[in-house]
Image (cartoon, rainbow, N blue to C red; front, side, top):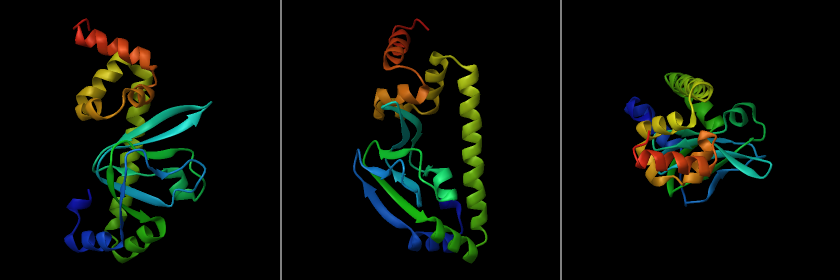
Length: 183
């Protein structure tokens, strides 16, 4: 989305964005702190997760071109409910909410970017809810492999199982059945 912007606007974003690299395992933000930035992942893979009864629950896995944030925290200026962590080494650009709002005032076309982010997140949530309500674990996994084959190669299986809402053992059984062409 950013690369399709008018070069003048893109340049303005680039000048105002903070360029930051995160090493594998580093956090972009923590639970219970306000998420003051929206991150655009240029390289690498991240995840959002929260803790429930001491267990990590992965809610999102994000790839290059994705925007990472805690939407509720970013918009309402309240503590985040989740953590954002680099799964691999990651290169990002980020903007604070105030800088993003300033840029939108200077370049009204950026209102479209804000709307795009909200629409994209809303569609993703609707899709995810539909999948969880209508698909079994095997179908969820097969659809994930089809949609994001690189995820299976680079994201730890514990994160994938958590993202799918299944145990690591269940994921292992599914993968074994697929490998044996039982499915």
